[in-house]
Length: 206
Image (tube, rainbow, N blue to C red; front, side, top):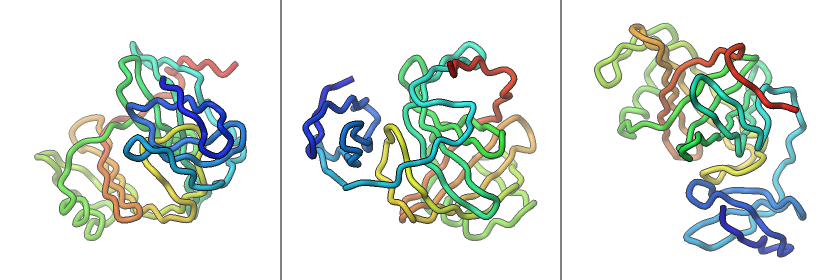
């Protein structure tokens, strides 16, 4: 953890510089973005209400042999309500994302997929269709969009309230793998992972 100071009020910002680019000052609530070692004040962003969740910021949990620390989250609204994307680090400081939607949790990490392929899949894929990604077959299980409502904690990228997130969910036909493809504000992202069983999570929400 590095000690940086908020450019608005001067209070200390405890940012994980290796991964974090966006955080909120605990004192003045300003949104701070770290770019090229310079701190920029992006003003105040929506404060998220404290909704029920199995995860809590800065409270570790264990799954299997691995321990994880949630350090940030983004909330998206969509037709059925909202879901949250939690940015977490494992014991070796490797980054992951956990999607939490109606009690369902998916642990994913970023993986390399050409931008052109992500664009094509998001544009052309239809529900229940089968597609092939890196030699493996996946079924399209969800295709929708959400709108960013805000964030809390620390994130590895800048976000803007009101930005639309177009996404595609795909489930492997051969093993317990899940792929998420996203387009947000002109940026294309691919993640791969698997479902978490909440009953096997050792939570510390005290």
